[in-house]
Image 1 (cartoon, one colour):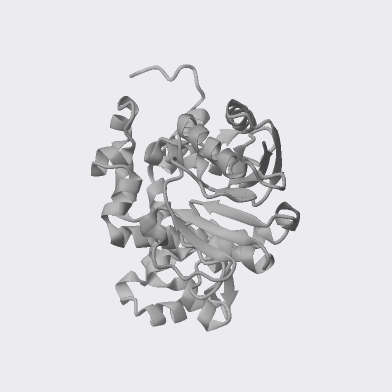
Image 2: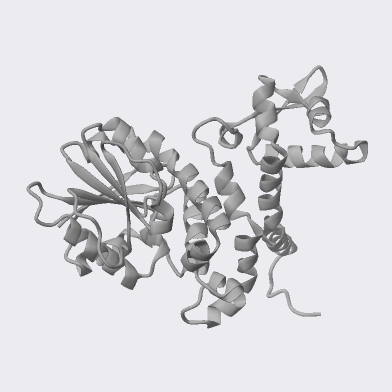
Length: 353
């Protein structure tokens, strides 16, 4: 029998628990996906009060043999904060929490489309290629699994492209909560271009807050074609690696983490060009992750590092700490910047040429 390297039995058992926790972590994702597909958050919301397990089983028409299994699912998700577990008339009951309220259709923000997109087998199955990805210098797990990068895949598959756009739009709804407290960031601007702005969810939020601000949503032509414009919101199709429409400011929300440093430098150079020659001092506004292991709470750092791995696998991108952001800015002649907290894990970076 092999040596335990002098470790106590308690340490070995803790190691096993950690190993098994990650080994079965995919079940976490599938549990989350299942409650979205079953519509459980919607059922509880419509019920108007905590719902007993028996009432929930009746609405779902769960076969008697599966009631205990669904109870296990609800108990597990309640343990992790997706539901509040209560007792009503000596019966188990469940109420929504801040997390499950985000999955209620018809409310805003609504993140179920994000769950459905990220946990679609087309995307999630690609992570089985991580070993091969390590040895392939330029390929993402998507390249290996599907034979093309994410953006080419979306172009060739309109149905999945629609799912992806809905997911990004749902995530952008969170900006409504964050940006309403950031009015100083946009005050004084006459025009702004939202690069990679998708179907315009974030731009519409900005337009509502600043009716006199001209907003341009800039994305791939197939994303923005046939979208409805208004007096201060327009859509432009194009390639951010070639040029970006002129404006007082450029917004990059959750864009740069998709790309390598080389690609980011090119995007930032085009942003710099887009805001040059303005009568007012232009700026670049970045909404993205800033890794800060020394100051962030453990769970926040855990999420940021997890997303760093995800971006690396899917797009050969990365999440960055402040030093890495600063290096990028200086390499393209952008030396004046300010970082402010925005959401629980995203930061807002203002950069001036």
